[in-house]
Length: 173
Length: 316
View 1 (cartoon, rainbow over the protein chains, first blue to last red):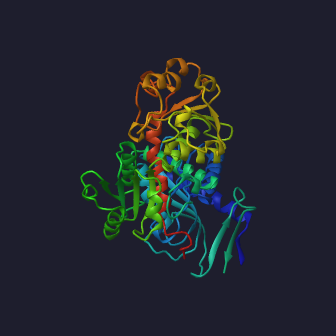
View 2 (cartoon, rainbow over the protein chains, first blue to last red):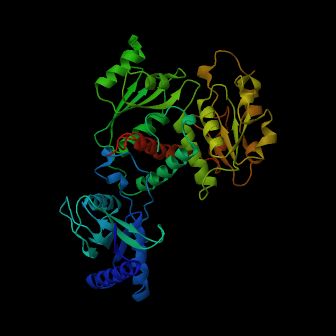
View 3 (cartoon, chains in turn blue, purple):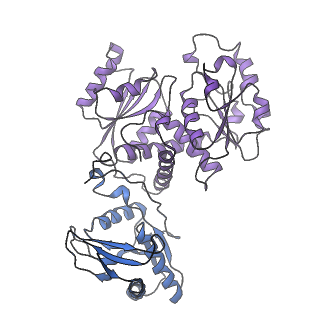
């Protein structure tokens, strides 16, 4: 078990990602963020708060992907988490999906399906705090907090103070 | 989360019931959107096995299954080999051979759903959609959902809600399931019925009893009217329909005594003019249409939890 990112590292990564999102999308007018619960939703809130402090308010939503997972019938069903459309919806917007760890890419595939149910954004981008590799689908992130090469047997655990005790990313062998 | 079968409201813990209601709320929100269809149960087959007539429940289960992309086979006793004398066992084994993943059963005999679940006739998940005068658990769930939606949207359970259940308690599976579920969620229940329409042993239930509708109606948050089930009545349980209607029917005079935020419920089908007057059924306090709408979301939640994943304890 080792610490990959400290609280300050997470903070810096979120700030950099926020700047990159703004730079790439030329500001906030057409931008919406959607976090994937549980921790992706808190990360989206943090990015929105930082963007709010430097450029102005940006719409944030929450996207639960449970019903679109492709491993549903391999595991016991999970309780659904709330889905909240951002104010103004996602139709024609530049939508940035936010999640904590990018691994196989299957969560993001499910998220793309779930978005299709809600509307048709102009573009969909992906921001993740950690990219640990081992993709099983042709999916990549547009904004990455930190690339961390891992072994397939290890796991990466993100702690955020809104939900856990503290801000921390650790590697569990 | 629930697993296996849904046979009785008594099988649900408080936590499982609240979980189902929360899941139903999310599903209701999704199906209010532009695309009502979810891929979750693609490839699953659900059989609606209806030995008794039904409009709402059958259509509701069919809609719920289709919105989750399951295949639905409708079976009703009329027009099937049941009218040639085929037994429940042979019918069940036929459905098993055709690969049903879930069976939604309505039957005139109390305990039919449990019989189907306990025997090895069929491996599918069994959902009780009404068995005789015994239980109708999904109706209780949708009633709890509707009460919560109107009166307690932001609290955890139904603590302190006063529910009046009026009418034919004796023959009502809706009343039995509702009493079991709503008391578990913290509601206080009072039954109002003529003595002839109360079951033996009702004094042991955790409910209050009254014969005076006029006295009770001003003190409740929810008034749930039950249908007079003429098809189950071989004897006369009350002198005349007019007398029943006068003493135990919901009319405009009684409606005006209801508290400001109170709601009127009825599981349907209604006998307008008998247990509920037309103007009461169509009043603004009536949430009967909401009950029907919420039925779809609640049944989607039940189907999702029973069929949406591998059985509990079977994960990698």
